[in-house]
Image (cartoon, helix red, strand yellow):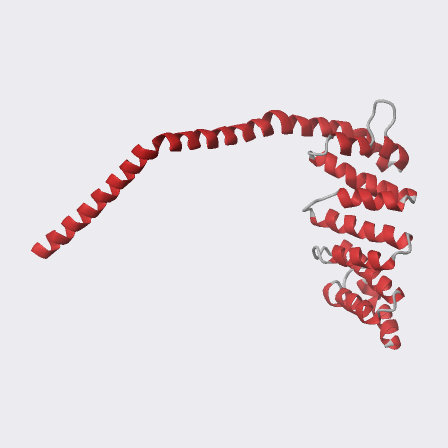
Length: 227
């Protein structure tokens, strides 16, 4: 029993000493700790204020500004959508004036696709390369569209690079097999039958029910006949 009491006393002494050390630390560093806490609070409060009173209203304004350009895009008035008209902003202005917003980021995408439709492939590449997103389908389309622009410029190595990047992003059943087929055809044009077969076989194994998958055996057979 005496041994137990001694152990309890030792534990109590250890705890008391630890508390004393903590108290002493705060006594010696209280001012610095308080200053640091105030600084952290100020940063957090400043960030919340920035989001609430600046970023959110700016996002709302950007969404309003992009509305007309989106309408022109939907009716295939691509030049107007890009450049705007009168006091109505086009995608280029929205992207420049609201670059920190989601709408400004999307303006890069819309402008890039619009340039692609107009045959201005260098501009399409430039704008689509400015677009960044974690949304899986849009990410595939943006990268694949850059590949399309490079194909139109007869730069097949660059086109294949972006097609490969597009199909590595996710496994969407619609857009991925579409760009897998383009990757395979581009590799075939480059004389790289092994890579072409790899792309075509991925369609067959992963996307057999896709539109591309229903006819993929024809492409596979053609490549195998060359090898």
